[in-house]
Picture 1 (cartoon, helix red, strand yellow):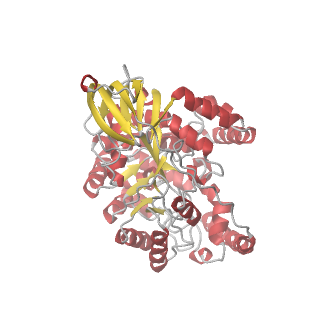
Picture 2 (cartoon, helix red, strand yellow):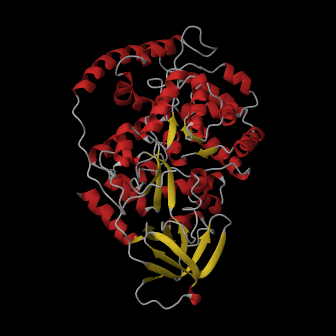
Picture 3 (cartoon, helix red, strand yellow):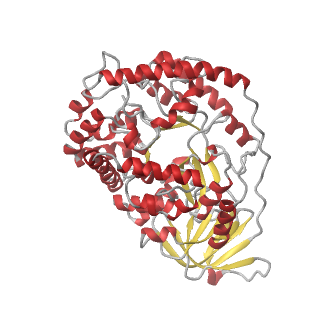
Length: 533
């Protein structure tokens, strides 16, 4: 069995245009597109040679989860996220990494050989799941894993993969032992024009990733016909498909077309064009072509060049990914925003079982980067000097944006909060994800919880979004999402009732991963050791 595994963003804001593009295109946008094509030519030629001459990566060592000794937790209040019920004064019995019983402590037989943890005054919940992370892309994952575990994250959906990661997962070479979260879902390479420039390409690439062992397909950018064909091809292989919505794809049509999970509300401004009472009028003004010509995608090494040199420019703050035309469209969209249309979209999500992982804290860091929290977050002081310097420079650059543009960016995020709140109220399925690598300035699980609460989710809904909802999405309700006999022993003890306040969800006293228990003090000591070495 692979490592801990029971196997079963980039909408390019400011997309450039050609001379025949819809209303709203510009000569500047066309030149931008031409320039990117030329860049890909030059970088692609160089990349082709670089790829051929690159040395093979170092092969990581194999790891495995060490079997945990049996133990039980007495006198704890067990919370069931599925229905929000609480069972006071219960014992949780754990053996060999599984929960074997949950019964009243008063009914527990005397067993002197089993270690006992006193859970009096504490609340037990299933371990949290970060359903949108990129931690496995880090050169070193030890710190990211430690940070996740300290925040109660015992399961992850990695949102970008590769052949190398799939091979390392199959050979237990990802470092996923008992001090790391459980890897729940791993895709292959991102679906982009470089590997899916046509329907035939997409089908071939999805078949190849399936053969390599991918758990799902991550969509980023494709022509509409390729996008919908990729959904069908993934489903034909029994794979879910999740990710971004390409610029021409409307979010309601994507849901009807069968996409399984939409990340970041689709990415970019298209969500608000759809939710406008003047949707058709605004969409008619919106560029619908890809940010580079299709011929550029076929250049040898272009995909590598894009990843290495260009992708970052499409993933930064809104100041670098949003042009004047888009800002004007957003302003119109906000003025004509319709809560009724947001509720109708939620109904479509419910009907089609389309899941959303909003990644609220990450979106906030792109549109409200001038918030004092991005200077006051204690994690900033723990960054390496170069990362701290780059972060402070980015905050300064964002804050220097014109007040008129900042007002639009700020309203963007407020509308995100409004929209996610409407979806939650209407019962649309939502999952929690950070789009991070363990911990960032202004981005943590506690902050993600807080922002979901600001959107209007109740504490129970936030708990469900990070426990029972991921279990349902992944088809793992028999192994995760509740504290019950037969479930994996991935759970948390909290010092506050998580059903009373959002803050209670982060009052972590103890983390159990596959039957191994760690106090919050022990986990923080490990983080401190990794940060200072």
